Image (cartoon, rainbow, N blue to C red; front, side):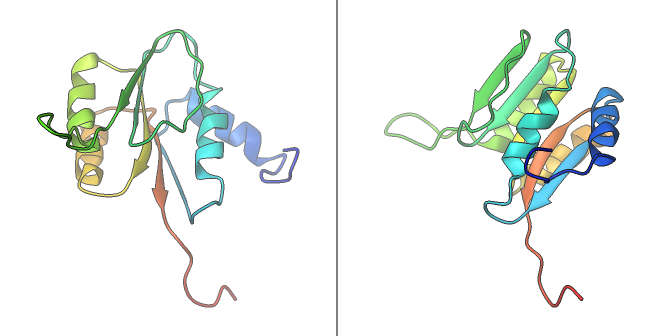
Length: 136
């Protein structure tokens, strides 16, 4: 609101969407504020909800009492990789009220759609996208 990224009408709409457990996918190009918006929307999540946060690199700043953080790991000598896809599948066993997914950029998109299709609501995530062509 301070920097006019959201209109006065959009803020209450987004707050209600989060409180009603609507799934929200934030799309935009590099440096457009996707993660910043995700951080802001996470403030509208009730403190009594179990939130599982999955990230490739820790960027999301969320302070909730019932938060579980998962971070992907590259393969290291003698230690296997743990992918976003692995973490998303494991998350469903933790009975989350909410899933926050740092960025969807690969095969995990299919797993996310499956989770949403089986009734997992209130998920917030970002996806990289850029506008092409003439905007007129």
